[in-house]
Length: 124
Image (tube, rainbow, N blue to C red; front, side, top):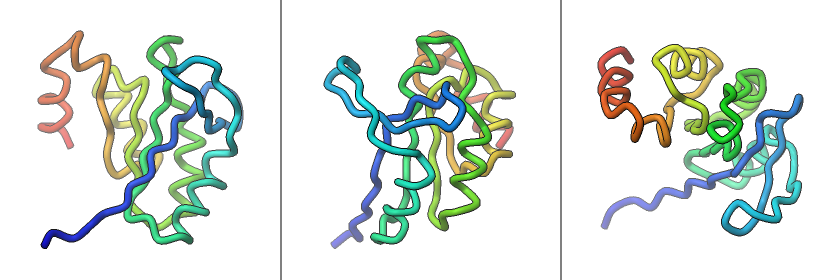
């Protein structure tokens, strides 16, 4: 039997100074649900194997994911951290890795530039 892995995914709006975890249905009627690094610490204490931050507004707003939120989270939790949303280039991936993410999730940009995933994989 394969080992089970528990991987919470937090939908985030990291375009505000402290970042925020949000909840909604089909990305509508979004409501505030907490501070990213505080919820990450709770999941870490509860035994989650990994954590995913998905910045659900970064691509739509054409902005970068806030690296300082990733830095604060990575310095406070001790599990692998995946970050997605707003990763459009090698430089974006580098910035998120340097902030402490273990993995990046490339979404919208991979459809627009199919070579991006290959480029990131070769570089990192």
